[in-house]
Structures are given as C-alpha cells and as structure tokens.
Length: 115
Length: 113
Image (cartoon, rainbow over all chains, first blue to last red; front, side, top):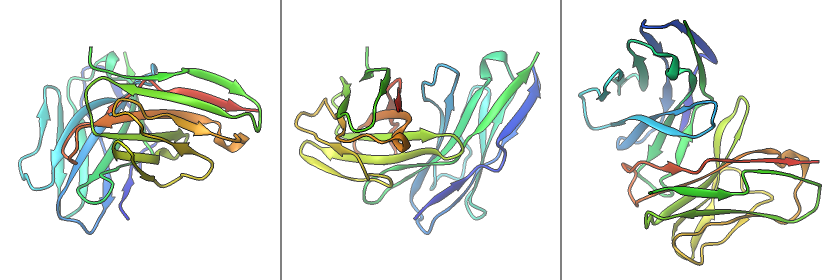
C-alpha cells in the first residue's frame, strides 16, 4: 500500500518570500500521479498542481512549482512571492493507476503567511 | 457551473439515528468517492464507485454504506452512527483515469453525540 508523509505540521513565511513544503511517499509502482491540494479556511479542497511520475520536468503553475525526485520519492511544493491568500492547509496526495484509482493523502501542512 | 454538491453542510445527530449525506455532480464523471478528514490523519477514503452499480470499500468503510443507482448521485449512509464517526466528510468525483483531477464537494461537518 502507498503511504504519503508530510513531516512539517506547520510552516510560516513572510509575505512576498518563498517557502517550500515537503512531501515524501512510498510505493512500488512506477506509474502514478502526484498532487498538491490547498484547503483554505472555507474547507474547500482546491487543486494546486499535479505531476506525472513519468515526466522528468517539474510542473509549474504560476507562483507554484514542484521539485519531483522520483528515485528519492520526494515531491516538494515551492510557493514563490507568498501572498496572504496562500494561507491554508496543504495536502500532498498520490493517485495510483491500479485498482481503485484512489487518492492517498498526507496529513497536511498548515501554512501561515506573516504580513 | 460544474460542481460537486453535498447536503447537509452541517449535521448534529445522536448515536444510532440513521442518516444520509447526499452527493451529486453535474460533470458526467464516472468515478466518485467519499473521504473523511480527521485532525492529524489527513483524508482517508471510505468508499468509491467506478461507475453506476459498481462500488467498493476504501480504507475505512466500517459503519458506512453507499449506493450508485444514477451516475450523478453517490449518497453516504450511516445506519447507526457512533461518536467515532464525528468528522468532516468530502465527496469527490472525476473522469476515469488516475491522471484526472478529483473535484471535491464543499464538505459536511458531522457531529454524533
């Protein structure tokens, strides 16, 4: 079974600075997708970025980018030019290509933005 | 507007009183799933459905039932709720295929006294 680990329960960053959230996972599969979801105080789950395991190039979405290290099973999220609206819980998730295609989530990192 | 809706958004009930949380999506998605979110545990899958009349257990199915009679609806049934089912529940849907984004409903906060 796959597991996803987020070792930083809480992080904080000054507004306009850059912050990196860590995520590691364990799997024996070679074909899968990785996701970062944002959960603001409204509780809505919002997709931030996704990465296909077979793509070596790191995904980027505006101020959000990932550092995907397949051999190390690491999938960190970098947020550049942090804004107050980035304050949220961030979840790393793994989606298998087999069986039930379920999302396996980490325990989350709560990000605080300091004005 | 493409969306996943859940009702109710908030529910306080008592032990043993049967309840249903509805979930509906308007995106013609084949795949639907229920998750529960608990502090320090992230989101865990309860049940999923790959298509109409096809459902199966996730990681934490005990105490829950589901049905998928129509493509758009995937209700979650708690026949005899207990306090350990107090949680935040999310319904999600996607097109078939692991590369597709799962769209989440707004969540249902359930308290069982």
